[in-house]
Image (cartoon, rainbow, N blue to C red; front, side, top):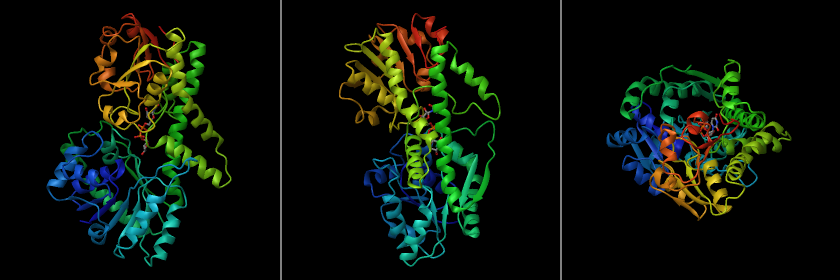
Length: 452
Ligand code: UDX
């Protein structure tokens, strides 16, 4: 079995390290952040991800997963060094690659000649060639493979174990094959890993294909995939705003539009817009990389503009329903994470909505089943974070579903109505049936949906 080093304990790095170690490969996971390492040692990730903690706990206990802050302790023993360090964005929207290059430089000082350097961080085209130059300057000539990651937060284990595609790109065919072989090891173990994680395999199995490409193509595939999904969402939101003026129901429209197999229904749900650590950054990164090359991606600029306007659109609807003013109104914001199934609040439209409401003088009471702690540092000082959703709803003039957690969507609308003082119910995720909400005396306000 090969030995692996994963650089970075973020969403991608820690999930990858957990799965590789659970599949029977000794895996070092390297991070300079001691509190993150301490958490891994205790069998926990620093973020919430379904099924991940039991896998980490077991792998740490059996000694297969080794958290460390030392390249010297890990990299020289490894056949594969997988870079999954952060790529924050610069103020101009371009990707900040300082951690990517620093990791490559430090690994270069410790790699065995046969080791393959695998890039999982989302990086712009040209990064691989730049790293090859850094390696040459350091006197090493290790193979470099781009292996973009497509996992979604909240379904990270499922997405990685039952994948649509694994993409490997580079100039060294033998190295590409070796990277594919490592993934085969994980694929073979996926049933047992899912069992340890306590998650069920999907009912319909995805294609599970392995795709080998050039280095530049692999680098582009990840960003272009995310850009297209972001485009679909902004398209859904644009026509959702149009539907608001026509009386059509956008959920009916897009369900039928998406029934065309050429279009598909996935990522075609209108709502308060996309957030998270990937889409906003990947879209701005692609726009910036395009401009750098003299190519203006007008279509992505438009997608970004639409998305950035969505929280304001939602807040305006709420404000209108409350008679045009938010000052002194009590508003319950249910959901703060950028999507259900995660504690991640990065670029969360739900946080933007809560903050806009507070900035306009509303008394905001917010609750999230997993993200309360992460949200606190990002929220306006006047947003009260509650321990229970019914505390957030108590005496509210209006409630807004800002993230579609099952804890909310599984409730009968009467459950919300009974705690509230007012009747305004904004479904910013279009996840309730208007008629069922109106039946309990609440006023239904969705995105692109006429009240029944
Ligand atoms: C995304 C990609 O899906 C994944 O392949 C990549 O590796 C990382 O980026 P993630 O950011 O975890 O994953 O979340 P995702 O499930 O894609 O959702 C992104 C955002 O889009 C969320 O805020 C979600 O609420 C929003 N969304 C999604 C919509 O507004 N409408 C939709 O129809 C789908």
